[in-house]
Length: 374
Image 1: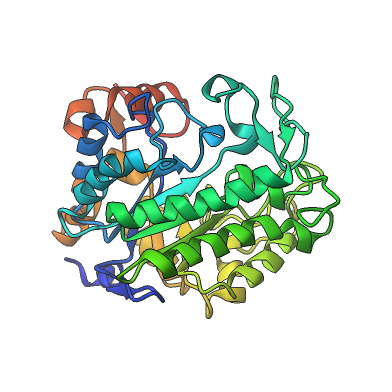
Image 2: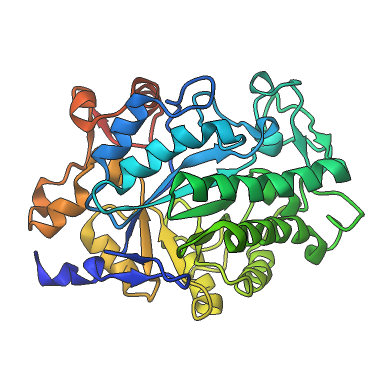
């Protein structure tokens, strides 16, 4: 291994005490490949297995905590104890080669497609549709529904513990329900769950508390709790970077193991504040990085890119597209085979890359996300 890449292979211990063997995480990526009943499929397990061993940590695709929060076809569930055996197989598959397994838990809110919901009615903080063509108007959640959803995140965490995962990542990003409560676009409430910036934090903070309580009650070994956040929204009104700075300051008080900053490009500055050029990830790290570890992500394709990002002081890097195109990315870096890392997705390599059919169709048909060659 080239010594300039040593930083990638340093061990890291989360605040909870869970130790990982290197600084690379697999970013959570939807794969559309679970069974319709919410169980993990064999094809999905093979896909996860192929990408374990080298990386220190694998964050799974998001799993829905209640049926009214399912957001994708072919998505696996964590909403009932009957799914624990299926989830256990997933955890064991990831852990079989020494990689830590973190399951992402979430609720789609107003982003959930109507045809995937029991009553064809998405819910959200307020009855405000997303700004996309044909978006349905969600039903504003009642106090009872809010409390049931908070409880559902706690129960999902218990199931993750019983299934043998090493941690959970609370999905508070990418316009899903937790972000919808934090956003002034989707949250127009005037009760304890909305109105001021501080009140818009209450729902996601209540979720964090429910997850932590479940860990305290059920975990018999150190267990990771992370939180994923999108720092800005393009809508008006929408979340600003300043809103997020205040929110992460609160999250840093919650004894979390990490904050995962969801952006397309690690180095990009604010898109709402055009005069701000500093990376949003490094800015958040400067504010709270001494209190909670930050996970960086976004267009870091090569080991040199990753080292440059780690040198900012951000301790962990999540890779997504890179591990789709090259499942053995980290093994090749360690073996000094950097020049052999795939940087394009060949239409002939589905079987070699162990990618399930539903995900493969998305990858080769969505223009611009991956460099696809014939």
